[in-house]
Length: 223
Image 1 (tube, rainbow, N blue to C red):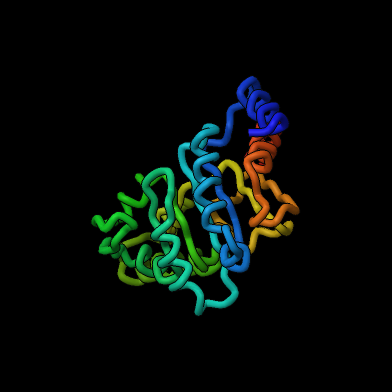
Image 2: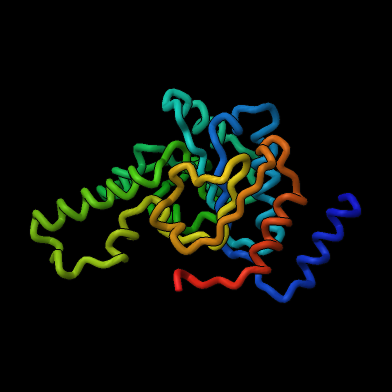
């Protein structure tokens, strides 16, 4: 670690503000297909856990759906620092339908409960709009079957039908100032951090800058 990186690490440690417990990282398929991008991702997951995060969500936005199987396969081989699960576009409907027969990166039974216990969750091409629409379809079906009273529907009914319902504290987006259809429901009160550093050049100092920026903010949760 260089001198400047050491300075940032010490500043983080001495900061009065709490670090984000749940960090989300948004990257694009093009970023991930660059040389060394998977190694950078594995390192970034380690940084997040090292500097106070208890949960990390990674969203890979995809324009060309044909690359989803390749990216999903490679991500399941990722040398991650802790247990993780990988989800794709089909999992939105499966989560809404209550399908609990998946296989995780370790080959074990991967129910929604197992998903929620995994410190690291990765989505590939799972757009926030599609995920939200799948949840609405499931609610509409429950109402039509008489299992749900429309007057009783609340935010929890939506969240329960999402693939990864937990809300991130900090969302980090590299390369451009847009969320790329990331978790439109879950990130409504998240703190957003945009950096013009491309993913292939993302370093520990860039991660620490994001965390320090978060610690300097006063969260308002929509108020």
